[in-house]
Length: 182
Image (cartoon, rainbow, N blue to C red; front, side, top):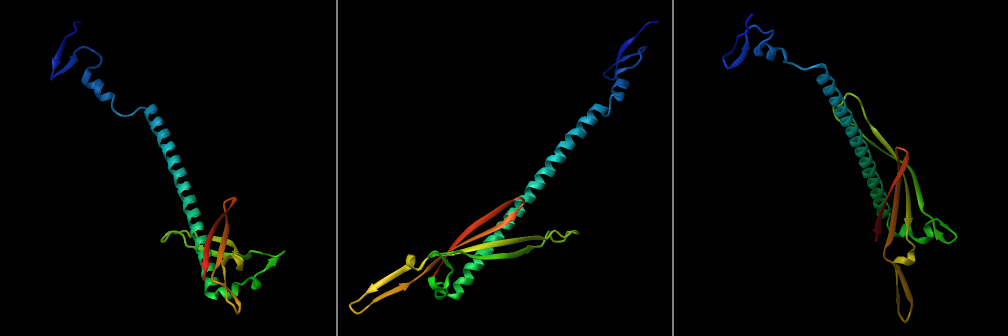
């Protein structure tokens, strides 16, 4: 049998061959099993990377909320002591040990944040803070005026250092906020 070759519609066709080029092109459409498995593996790696990123973002959000709450607690303590006035913070009114002023400890201050609004599951975040307030001695902010009749000493300010600490995961986080009461 004789084999005839020719060009039909711009495509090489073998008349007596097993497959012509048009039919061979139609059979090669679609994806093979290897391509599908490689695509599934790549998507799996991408999915795991997105989950890891989401977990890191959640931890960062919780750490920031904890720090913001600590700042709020420290500022509330400074404002409360400022409202009491400087007269309540004299050296005679503060706890001392061996002649040194001991920090005032305030424990178990709780703050709660509501989770994502509209979520079906509540994700409330509760943080327990502990604060230590250190007040500077009177001598640090005292002026003395001398006249021929008497010496007058005046305490014009007090420095407060508020250290707020809280637990985050397996470590203790803390901040220090300073303020002046006049």
